[in-house]
Image (cartoon, rainbow, N blue to C red; front, side):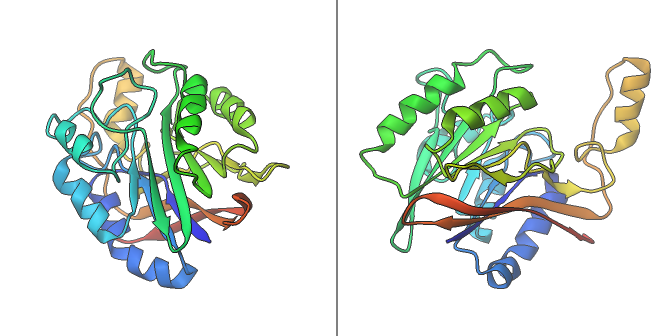
Length: 261
């Protein structure tokens, strides 16, 4: 099977580019499933119900997230209602929402697990132990394919979890930094990895934001009002070619496309 997993969708430009292009991408690449991290899809920070539904209707089977998913209070009950919008599984007990889901694509059962890192981020539960717990829980549902979105800042933490889960999951895909990395590879035990998927948003930006106030903030060390940039849009992600019988990834290909919005 073939899956396209897109990087963080940033604001209206990212949403529009993804929604406009998805039907053609499915046909062009003969995709079985398309997924994305959507925690910055509303105004460049957070996700509201309207935009979550828009992306799901456009053809994204699963939306993952991270530390910005909590920005809009309206999303809290929505996290409880849906099985296709995830928040990281290593948040404390009784936090709204779910950290993983299992869906069917033909005869293949595909599990998606969302985790968040702790280095340079909020002090959450251990993502390594959380992964152990969820993988044990998943055994009852017997998924053929397991994909992990690891929403983390530190490259070392992402690489460490990659080695920890090698041979236990189909792919470990990093998100959060919005910059696509050039290290997409498949390990000896069939686990695909990339440190960061990149983003779907304005190309000429600072991680999707208008560069001017960001630069000013770095120069002056004073608070600035950020806004989503405009101009040409980039779509980043990876194509995963998977043997659904063994659950091993046969190939991972970094994917990027630019378009006018």
